[in-house]
Length: 441
Image (tube, rainbow, N blue to C red):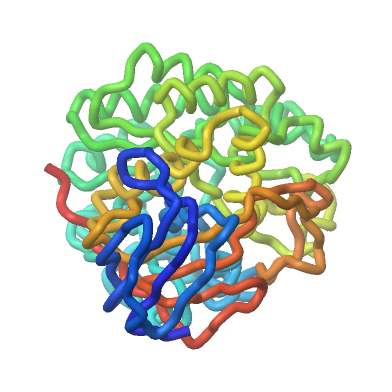
């Protein structure tokens, strides 16, 4: 719903200082203009009675694969952004492994143009590094950063050796986000375990050591050049311990909800639907990842939304693609953990919004503050509902959390002051905006 002004009444509001206020928020011309216990104005286009709901900053998902262009049979920017709206995700940062790859200014411009026409939430895109596009990754704009695939093979995007990585770290000052797995070790272990069709072997082929090797290499190069580094989807206890002992101020790390709450037990339950890169790990890894998140070693959360069709997932390991959807379920999964006492709602909001905006230098996002963009989500933490396949908006049509009974589902999602999701209805006429990325200090 396009509105020039919006008044949210009687919400439990998470304020920027981490305190709570039961009251009202007034939005005019896409920005938050007033926050108070009782706003008396009636001069608004739309009012929402948010009694019983919690108002949080909109989720910023800093790692998604939305498959357009080239792989639209799995997902596209329309279906993906609709799934975002349903999940309370008001902004996303998307990865370059599309077809064509996002490795030039022209490819980046094409994605921005597509998103401007299709996405109902805000958007930004990574530029992908290859062994041969150093000028492009330094000059392409606007971009949130440089994506480096150190492993899990991605064709021309594979940048797996120190010799090829070094000039990427040595030149320029943009954020480098790494998929940290050691491809040489993975290749060796694929040979060792060849012929095994149980998908659980995936977690042994791409083992903890493969992740640790690559994270150590990226960290060493980051320290050598004092280069801004972000480690994507941290998955192992060993990586947490490494960073806990040795994490410069310019290094950040993220974890996915699935690496926090799923583990290798999932293979027996959902088979190849549990297959992702880096793989699911052990109960012990779950516990150490939680500890790292709670103590600040891990900075924030991303979904790594990477959908594949059920037909693709049914091909049988090792012919099945790795990846799972996540934008619709991430916030309820994490809020369910908060309600259960694993963490606080305030921490979830910081990990899924405030800390992301800070890490990527996205201005006026990630906080319910006067003058900030009105990217907001109203959630219900009183009621529970199971994840059901029939409700999935993502084009892939499934979730690894099917059957899980969750709370914290969005009731309203608001992007730039406009209601894009309301009680199950998606408003596809709204369009999001390209995110800005202020230069790092």
